[in-house]
Image (cartoon, rainbow, N blue to C red; front, top):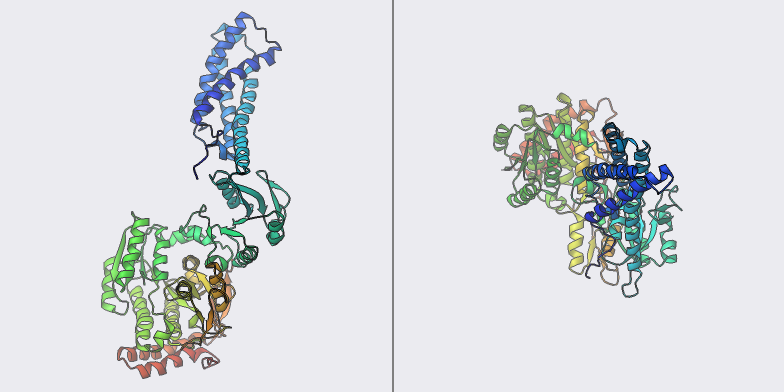
Length: 632
């Protein structure tokens, strides 16, 4: 559709001409008001001319210097109002001062009443504000009239969220070329309900969406609440689907903070939005304090978590950023993205395997990293069930190598990424990650400010996770396969997980074991239904969900804490420290050091049977249960 020109989008040269006319008229009116007459004596007329010759150039110069001719006045707001008033007051004071100085030398000027510059400044202020904001008001009215033209049916839009983000959506809608009829706002702040925001009424709360949408014949809903939790977004999406309304959403707060999107990026609702966590205080400055100007190493730098970690770390301006891994293609992709987004950042790729201690020592000797994030790990549960030796060599021996080198090179802090599958594990992957956690806990006994481990659940969109699998199945026409109708998992988006890992790195000394607040577990079958719905399909009509069976090593429900761990919230509760209340806990874990060495020796010897025997003995030696929970 060709863009219709708004006649009230005055260019700044027109404002300059309007101001010139206003200033001349204001000067004459000021004299008339003060002298209470329009019949001026010849000497007074000459004085008026001289006053105008002084006042108008000074005022126009000050207006220009303060940016009054470099603004887009159709979007003018409080800051522009203050700017106009400030420019008028400042110019008035300067003109009054200049008139006093000149009056001592010019007889005609000396005849002028000293109150004239004050009256002139007041008239100019009212006129300047009026011309600019009346153009803004007329421009918006023009937009509304244009959307009401019968030949151009306007989409009836309801905005959810009457805060700052809602205002930005409103600005965008008011200046779009597309015909849009804005119905109003919904907001959960009861103080806003019934009020007007820039002329549009806040019609009610979010829970009234269904009623208000039906009463006002709404056709499209725009959700402008970046910090709203997933539960609220889910309710809005379900209501819109039931009423057959189009709906879009602003990015969530974690996406905005991560820099992946901007606040203007209205987009369709995604599965990440439905699982959103409440906004948390991320303490950006504290994260910057331990990253900025330092050499940072990320193992597993080509993986889903590692590459996003690197991307977020780049925003905090490290001195050097080292991405290490053994997958050349994924490392190349991560490097390309970093060099595109952060061309000034010194980024280096190290093709290396954490299991190779000599190669890792070369890397440490070359770069001397000060902060290490250890994300390298094998994580595919069914695959590791049949490859336990590889699981131990990578997840356990690799972690042990990192600990040794961090101590040898006196690294400031090392943060290891763990998983909720390390809690009461029923699979090889979880057992190896729990063993790696134990190694970090042992290392932290000697260096409590150096080592930490962060445990969290499934990450949406990571390679091999359930979401890409469901997306592929939906794209192929189905069926979407779910292993059990009651199986649940904890979920978190990649930006959320990474930013909270960085936050955990602030409080290393309060660890060593941290657990991210994952919210409530989600049924996998509900996740499948949400993804089918978000794809515009209907379960049972367009695509089927097929219940299969639990895979080797699968659990029905994951846990974030062992039964002997106590959750201690840190600050806002977005992160917990896992405390071990038993007095003999550390004594017992110290006795496992020899057993872990034996396990690693068995893996080096490729003794699979011994690895399978030792792993559960080590992992469950601290649990009162003593045995893993059997799969039903």
